[in-house]
Length: 123
Image 1 (cartoon, rainbow, N blue to C red):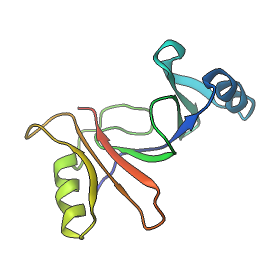
Image 2: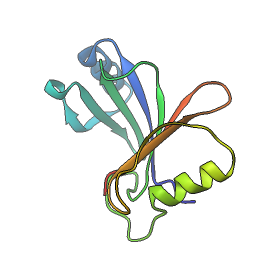
Image 3: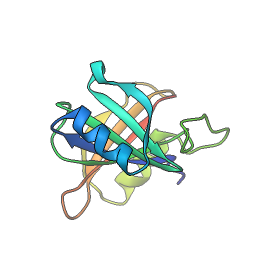
Image 4: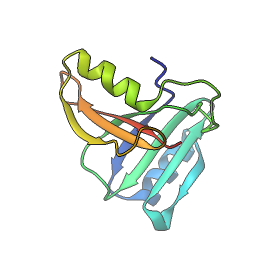
């Protein structure tokens, strides 16, 4: 399975304070906007999403179809194929948003320690 772009999505209390903190560590804003309550920060190939008021807890995120720079990949494992493989492994899906046979879709599940994992395909 090719899971695509990896990032950690952090639920933050104050987006501007978090942005400033991660900028001190060498991250820069790559995408998002303060007025939309999220920023994607980048330092080399490392991506961190900062999200204020959008969800509780932190989420491990994979974006099939994207590389670490959010550029489209020519070849990737579609989210529906990943979903089928995860379900075949007996992993319980906690949320599923798969409305078509192709294109954007997502699903999530928990690891054994309760950490949320999101598979979120944008194309």
